[in-house]
Length: 442
Image 1 (cartoon, rainbow, N blue to C red):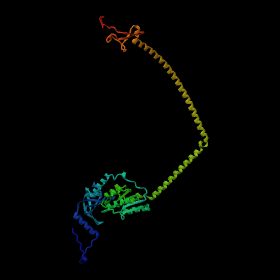
Image 2 (tube, one colour; image 1 turned 90 degrees about the vertical axis):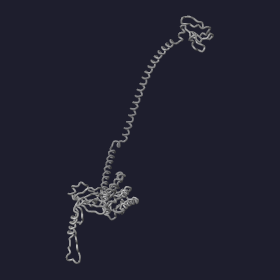
Image 3 (cartoon, rainbow, N blue to C red; image 1 turned 30 degrees about the horizontal axis):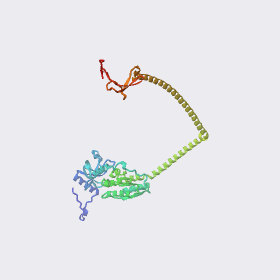
Image 4 (spheres, one colour; image 1 turned 90 degrees about the horizontal axis):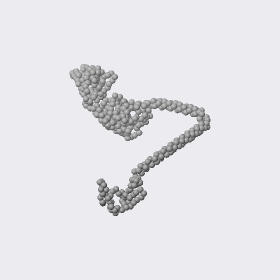
């Protein structure tokens, strides 16, 4: 279908004037007839999910974009959970939404075509920083309860700073706000944001920092998904609140920051709280403290009165005398017990001494009898005892006993012991006695 519009001075009276609705309807008809239902592949961006159940988003590639609507009825047949950054293939009708004059595709079917480039980059960086521990709860610092100086890293002309200042002015108008102005999207924005975070740390005097911007598409928020920003937040000595986009938007900055706020306004509320709420809490705390002090004072007063009426304070001398009497009683009891114990031990010692004497006498008698018996046995076994029966003992001059004639030489002097003395003799001859009674001269 080809449309032709002529508007020349020569045909002023014959020209055709179209209403906006008419021309829009013609364009819609031309698009629907020319393209009909088609398959398109691209990346999902700026996804919106209103309560109606319909989905509205933009399908884009490197060079262009097209609006798309996925009505609830068709969506019910699709198991795909659509998200920003997803790369999809969708089938639908090319048409024009007449009220706004925008051309769009009404989606009938949709398929996952793999992650988009931005979403893939987001997931890769998230995995890398998580492995380094930058998302760990243990490294996150608490936000001060009543900060006096707040730094804000955002665009000086965006909606985010207006929302933050509006909340602060209503709750704590005298709070010191230091704005570090930066670009929040486009080329160089991430570097500016990182430098601003470092600057506020170097400057000092800041209690807490808000880093963020208002809502937008995944591309609009991408500066807060850059590694340079994440690292600047991680090394910040000042606690950082990330407030990027809307409640449904999540960025890498949100995971690294000490606290995530769903919106810039919510970040301001987290920082300053409600002044009236603090006043009410202070008043309530003061009342509770006064009640506690009064109760404590009354308790001590009652205890003091009770003590003043007690027997101890009325008759203190009697109490001393009672203690003296008690001590004397203990002393007498201890003396009596000690005397009785000494007497018992002395009696026991005397008994043991007598028993030991009896046992020693009996033992001495027994040992004396044993000694007499053993002496008699020893005497009976002594070789000297046979001397009384006429036997003698002969020794050589060196004291050796003479047991036989062997080794005795004529002329050798011998000493013979008899019962009542000794006899010295000189050998003149040896006679050997044989078994058959015969004799042989030596």
